[in-house]
Image (cartoon, rainbow, N blue to C red; front, side, top):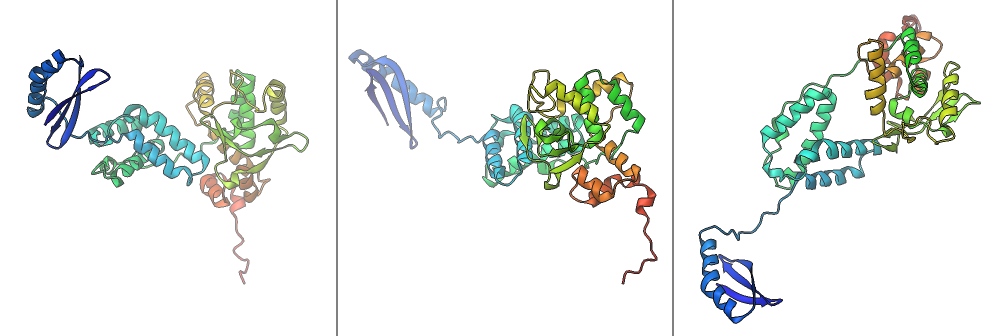
Amino acid sequence: MASLYAKNNKLYLSIYHNGQRVIKPTGLEDNAKNRKLVKNDLLPNVLFQIQTGQIDISPKKDIKTVAFYAELFLKSKKALLKDASYTRYDSIIRNQILPLFGDRDISSIKLSEIKKWYNYWVSNRSSGTSIYIANIFSAIFKEAFYDEAVDRNPFDYIRRPKKQQGSAKPFDVETMKLLISSAEDEWFRNFLALSFFTGLRTGEAVALKWSDINFEMQELEVKRTRRYGKDITPKTQKSYRTVPIFDELLPYLKSQYKMTSKKSEYVFLSIYGTPFNDGNRIRDYHWKKLLQKLDMPYQRLYDTRSSFATMMLSSGKFSINHIAQIMGHANIEMLIQKYNKFIPSEMRKIDKSIGLF
């Protein structure tokens, strides 16, 4: 069944075929000559194309993209995750998943594509990071599976490598002094001194503000961390803590105070006069460059924190509980598990002759 109608002085075809309707503009003005042309010439041709499948008027599939299910996944996690975790989820989705797959129909993605994508991350990131990225993408596919948009989750067929825990590799005191003194930029010397002498995580150090530092009491407060350009809550509740400023650190903090206290509320600033987005720039450019300059093998910037912990432990002047509090560990078990081999033997001694009752 077909009919002809006019709209805004233009002719249109209205055609029904197998219960579906298609509207096709002719582009012709509404007059007697053109109506005759359409009925005798154009209409039969369009009907023939529909019947032979050259024109498809079947209902269009409601395409659900990876971006659609990614947003669905993020919304489901918004109220459940800490700010730090949600920010990391969001960043991985925006930067590692959507650029390649965002506009794709999620049901069209092949297992081979996922394997190729995952192998790239396994080759270029640590096992822990690559597993973390893969698990987020897998969770997006689960949303699509529950919605019956896909009949399987391709990540169910991908074997993840075992997560390798990075062990603490603290620097000795002489190497710490060498690293600090060899840093070319004054602010970076100050940053390393802060990291080595307080055990702050890198994100906590770049989030530090002058209002957090009490020079008179020689204390600083850890109230936040910084990731992806945002100040967010610290890693755990125990990460909110007060850290002593030892005499060795004071000159470096006072040096930094002269440099940035009148420019910003933040202690450390990038070359643009703004706080660092996170610790990645410091690690990838300044830290790696310093190690190369000293012809030293690569070690994590995070090992400044390990170095502080082992210094405190080896001094024998602080209880394990006190060190755990300064470090912001949830409990002393975490400290013992991570740094057990660096704990002096006398701190482990137990008088077995003491009666328990």
